[in-house]
Image (cartoon, rainbow, N blue to C red):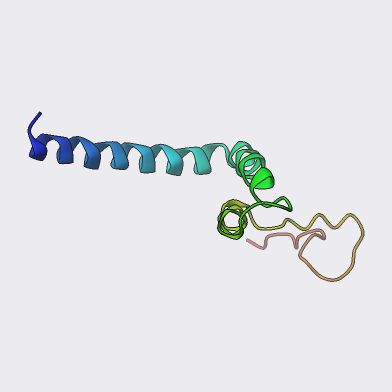
Length: 84
């Protein structure tokens, strides 16, 4: 196989993977979040190499705040009615 053709296939593969990841994040955010957690949790356990723990922290999604009770104004109250 020609080296130029191999590079072309590699670039196309990267573009397809990036596009698929973007669509998955937009259409299935909860599934992507669960997948990232499932991949990151084994990496950050005690006894793992420090570089693996750092990689796991980068993969892990940001923490979500699920305030059941009102602990401050986080815009969870009723919205103002629209004025026409």
